Length: 97
Image (cartoon, rainbow, N blue to C red):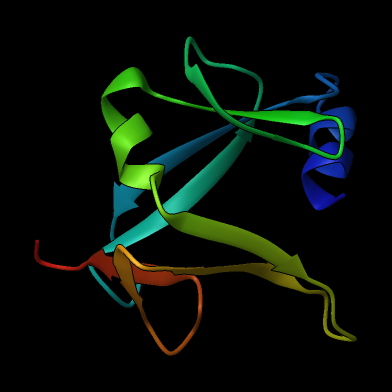
């Protein structure tokens, strides 16, 4: 629902873009932006299609992105078999093959 809210606020309902970027408290983090940004669809949930750059689609394989609300606001948390998640729950590094 949070992705739907963010896309609607940006004026592009139903389309969000996810990008793996370097940084955060671990090797990588995910940045979300409203819109497709010339990406490939990687997931569709609750009326929102999530897109990623074609060269990053494989990075999302086996990854779970969840949004948890809390009294202090909430945020996206990651899990999955292909990543080691940092203690903050938002940053990660890829496991060695």
